[in-house]
Image (tube, each protein chain N blue to C red):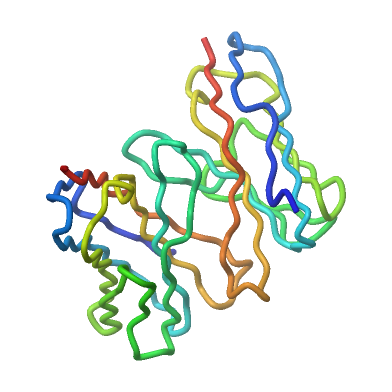
Length: 113
Length: 115
């Protein structure tokens, strides 16, 4: 039982490049989330998915797209990276059966130069 | 929309002492959950403690306890007998009972335990 896994752990991009951050969970959770963490700002919700096939915007969705490929996987895509997207990205999942504890992945540190 | 405020960006305390981290929130919801998450230097987010708003009794988990004041919309975390391993960022978070289980986080408190 690996919990929530994210790849890659580190990435450096040039402005304008694209990339996809991968997230998978093996806990059969319905809801999955993408957050970004910036110094002094806590974690902010980018997108979430309440169930397979559904996605919705969070607080800071601009510049990102997501895909809920199946129940296990929820990917985050940066189509044209900008320096403002330099951040640490966390994926998380949740289940009501665990009293709504969100389980987090280890994070991806992304630098856009 | 909900907001969560942590007014102490940094705190430090001697090992074995007790420390209290503050959190206030704003919501019009009546049923919700509150959480404290710990983020050590490893970056991993770890749940410390949770409180359901309909429960009047304050939650406790070993050395960690909360003071939940629903009317004042206050949710502080008390760490007793602090240990070096408690050094971390601590985030307070709010989740409404209904509404896609979205978490709203505060900006965090960096806690340093001094040996």
